[in-house]
Amino acid sequence: MPVTNSLSQDSQIHLAVVGAGPVGATAALLLAKQGYKVTLIDRQEPQPGPVGLGMDIRNVALSPASAELLKGVDAWPQKFAAAYDTMKIWEQWGTNDLLFNAADVDQPALGWIVQVAPLLAALWQQIRAQAEQINVVLGQVQSIETPSLKGQLKSQLQGPQGEKVVLVIQQQDDEQRVTVDLVIAADGAESVVRKSLGVPAMLIPTGQMALTTIVQTANVHENTAWQRFLVDGPLALLPANDANLCSVVWSQSEATCQRRLALSDEEFCRELEHAFESRLGKIQAVAQRQAFPLRQQLAETAMPHPRIVLIGDALRVVHPLAGLGVNLGFEDIAELLKIIQVNAHFLLDDPSSGLNKFARQRHLRSESMLRALDGLKRLYAQDKPAISWLRNAGVGIFNSQLWLKRQVMREAMGLSSKQ
Image (cartoon, rainbow, N blue to C red; front, side, top):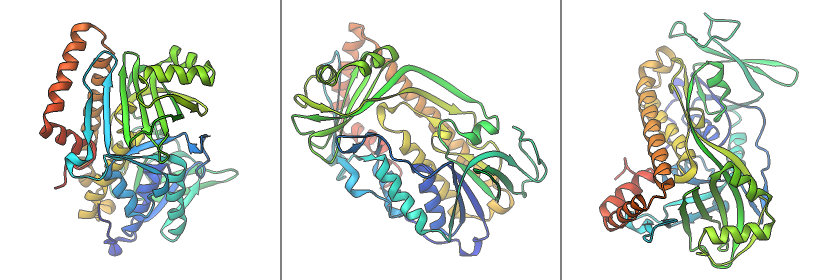
């Protein structure tokens, strides 16, 4: 979305963004570019991640809409973003491949697989360049207060709508207090802000772990995102800038994941090759393997206080099978900016008057995504012949309906509200 400096008359408005990962850092930069004074809070600056075969093992799939936001703050890591123009999906028991092509929606790419460390480095380079507008505070949020509720934090944090919020931040040997008009919590799945306010989060257990790594393949990946649905969980090989390197995201049961982590590199390569039906030829090399538990969760509300909103993983965590996670966080930013651009003065007087609609819409969007992904995971976990036949027939019908595929692609790419 285009960014304009439209807030010179409201430069006294002070916002805090808690969490300086990709979503929080981007939010801070976009708000600063509009003229707001922003305090960006995190425990530490970005740290290097695990590297394998010359790549950061951590990566995210970014949609064209998310890429547009990053380019708007000059933080697009071009050299570390691998475009994919095709997506191929098939299942363990099926015979039909589901194909998506960027050309079908007149786009150069469906999305990009972006390495996390270079992305954070690009964002923080811009943050440091905006030192007059963005004040970085390194430390842990200890408590949240309003003038009417000083002292111990209470989950029912309330008070006059016109009053500000005070964040108490614990640093190494000091304590800093930051007074702001609005707090944007982008501090991840274990959000300190959400937990401090006592906001319940609905947890949808997946019973799965995600095994991630980088592999070198004999055949080129063809700028394609490959995903195979196995009964135990989906397996994705995602393209890198090197035509023979792919990121692996393999969802599976905890027991199976622990067994695969213990395999030798050669044993793992052969097992991965078999699970992937050798579609990219022999797996020639593998980097170190990482694993983390998968879960889906949703906070009870996106606005636990008139002056506090939750975005990104602080609001919801989704299964990685569709690559939507961080893109939903960027959607949150875009929708929040739309509301603020219309009338920023409500942040000084009654923020809930403008943010109630944002909170409702983002919560509903999150609910629908969680249900859809949970349903998709359960559907492909069914190995009964009749269900497998129905899935396969459905894929064939869907694949033949170009208009429907276009609609699904535009939604996934964040283009549904454009053109």
